[in-house]
Image (cartoon, rainbow, N blue to C red; front, side, top):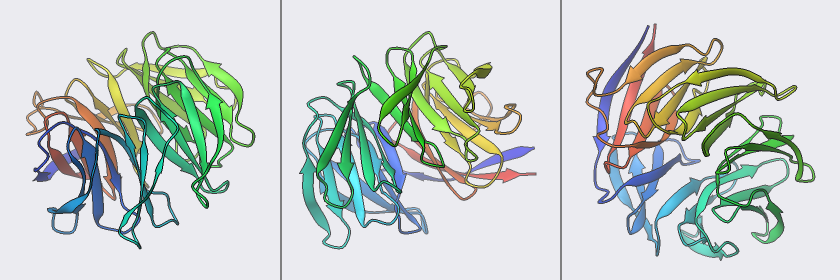
Length: 302
């Protein structure tokens, strides 16, 4: 049995919150959305710290690569701002895309940053020089989500054309296109052991793909509306999904069974609008929403 206790609600954003990311420094959370700046919070006492820097457009993606004193913020106007924690300022703007940035991830072994945009391309940047090294034309339409496999051999892109595209990370060549969703794919996430990939779509379905063959293992009618995000627990066999239907669900990552629904219908004082993104901080699950709130849940796994 899993119990979920709401331990904090962080308020201060004046508009919908689209994204969140834990800092490389423990106990720090960053959030961004349709506001005038990127916000820093303390998870030690669940309090507002400061607005890190102002932005000219909505923030759709935040990424803090392990091993680098940097924060990347992807904006609706296509810019990626690079904040240096040592210098405590924005040191560069990565300018390539003219359309919104939806996700940013890094490949540690290659020391590269991947930036996905509404323009259907993924730009590749050196984490050492912050110069662009490559552009991959993945789709004719939006790429919403990136997931890099744990062994950093392949990368999955969630596409608005209803597909998931699998690329070889060594040379960015297309290796597989996964068909199964009947509406745009909003989220992809490799399992921590790399044996399967989970995709979530506007069609409210979760699909589990075996990474050995990329055959479809299972289809799950997971939510009432779009699946916005998928996040695996860092050490326990569970993953969480966030949905436009205002709920969060906890699933077994070994049996794909539903173990917990966090929703108003189930008696939880939770989000009133679409839940956009999740992150785990140990056994605490942090969610952000169109309702301008950040909620921290403590989960107990009995």
